[in-house]
Image 1 (tube, rainbow, N blue to C red):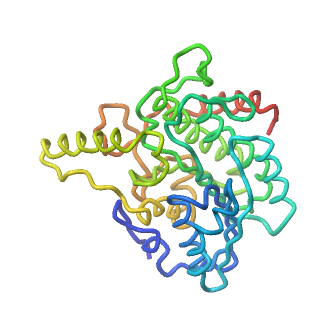
Image 2: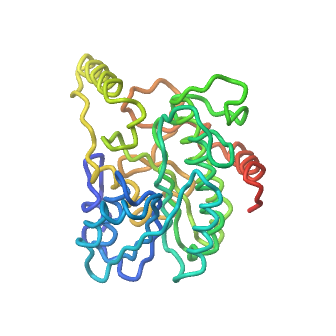
Length: 322
């Protein structure tokens, strides 16, 4: 029986009645925000979750609930990964590739948002290097470890809609750095990566989708500053009320994890493959005016030619061909 979910659905709603025993899932960013809830829900339904974190000692403490909620043979293990260092990414990929059976689902969840101007270990702009290039190398190095019929879910953001995407000056070497613009570019890159990965692997049944989890109060927005964020939310709420709508409400972490799980485990492969999803369904392309919480994906984020060009540029940047 097909079940319908929406913006209010939680991770447990999506997985209700689903037995994940025997399923192996890789999840980056498992020690914070929606990553913890995603791992908890998966392990609670019997999956074996391999989670990544930058700081293993801290991660073990904050993810204790994942193990305590594990049921039906579900389990959870942590491996070290710093997506801002390609050395760390390659080391992590090698370790994972050499141990355990194939993965049924890979979830590229980790990321940073609106960081001050900075560079990754290899000199890439922090947000593009971490959110896109780190995952680009990790997932591609593990592509053969995704079982036929498996799935890749890349956590993107509605922020991709805030600026057109360009392959020019991805490292902000010739233009002034803008934290929100850099974040938007990295999230568009996430979607384009899913589009091209899907094209390259669908022949063996591996499909890829990008998802927007929703607007959630997590540590991801810590670089924006509390006062700035609260002022922005207050302004948005006032605009919504003026339009006769309800004031803004944050999504819970449990609701934020729902679309990832829906796209990775519940939705039909052909429904989500190469697509962008939010609120537990596939989004329509909308290049017109969009309110702050309206749904829709920009066409440039799904453009297959841009996706191919970004793939080639990414290979050049990281010095690997996939």
